[in-house]
Length: 340
Image (cartoon, rainbow, N blue to C red; front, side, top):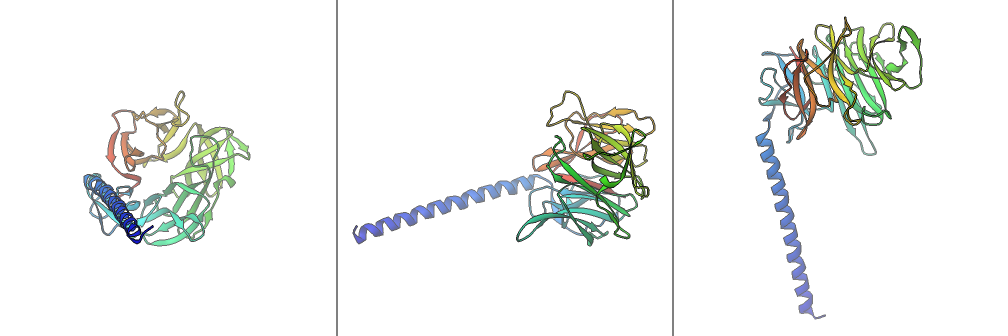
């Protein structure tokens, strides 16, 4: 091959690489432009101070899922303007809840050799007070009304509640002393009025009544139950069947929960119900879609919950009494908490 031929081939290769590189840059710019337009069309997010003590009215905190530099950060909006501009905190959480100036943030931890997860208790300014390693994928989190207790559930194996091949671990920590019950399955179980023991028990989805009493889901023998927990007595007492991920109303009289319904797909088995704790009467809400979330009461008459959305999840609301219709509350958001 002559020197001229080699130069010709080299020049052609350089031109080809340049064309490919330019095409890649243009493609990336196009995708970036698309994402910028999506962000511009979506919720506005800005940085600022975020507090767990409400000032200037009632507020709603969420894990922000809008595209951009603040995705996965805890952000806040006025509770009466949930679609308004969001103020992002800089603190990233996979699951989050807060009450009375205390927050619980379940985070991913990326290490040089391996990845993991942790539970971080936050103060009113979202500063870390204490952290705990957790044994699996974060899925539920709650803080008691006083802020004195925090609970979280993780998947130890499996990644969905839909089937039966999973194991959970639920912990409760006292934020005053840092004493921790790291596995509620060790509590004594009273089922149908009698002591009960089984190797297949799972407990998840804590919701607090006060600093001693709570409600949660117990699974055993292929069935689920609403249980009332007592931290002082270290007991779990079954109350009602086919209840998952309970959420106690602010007045303490009802529990919202996801219920498996006959005829539903095994991959989408749940509908949103409300249980009257005095009469044990169930009420189906007007939400007919599959709900895989621990709903939150925004007040004594309205439920908030997550459904799949364009950027992960959107928040919806529905009346708790079975009337009305679902409506979109907030796009690109999950893990809500109301303050004030």
